[in-house]
Image (cartoon, rainbow, N blue to C red):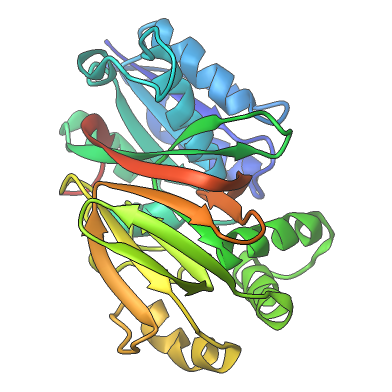
Length: 321
């Protein structure tokens, strides 16, 4: 019998309907055995994912948004972390023993957009039964944690960025629980507010394929194509090419952003000399002025200096083929 763990964010809206969808399609199936684990506090999904991985569940499904998925991914990777100091190393063969999945039910579901995954338990069940999963990459980043510790490390499934994106995430965290706006409008408000107040800083970074220095609005390093509740920032991104899609946003203005929204929604390349696209395996980032905020999968994690790289072909993920 196939063992499946659903890790459900306790903060999702329409939770009763989501759970009813899961119960309806996964109960009374002689081939599938499942358990639902609901989060009770921040970072609980990370602890639960580590726990169920170590208990031998073959499939672990994140039920929530990109933040919940980030915690689930980190919990599984923590279960496979090898002893040692410095950049974490992982037992990749052990990671491959488990398959991850996502039921998109959060305020931001950008990774799900890349893999074309809908909030549909019947579809998820079909993928499990037909073994429709792919071996994909993940990203890993180091940063200076907000609590002042010297270095933090974290895995990301979708996107990390430094600069204005991190500052917008900081602002978004303050308004999220107080706002009646939809997630898309909340993010749009955060972007506009940040554009109006953000001061571009001199930043230098070195990658395997490119070195760059200049005034930076934002530096995006993407495994998936979308961020910010449906903005297709990285059209070239592929989940299994062994590289991250890197986007440099230099002297970009609010007027530019508004005019480019249709192309961003369609995940198309933007033709502007201040916006550069390339792929790389590892990037070291330094702010030559004040430290810059850094976000991963929609969650603020710390500040620069930072190092971001790809963990190649490391885990199986359920997705339509």
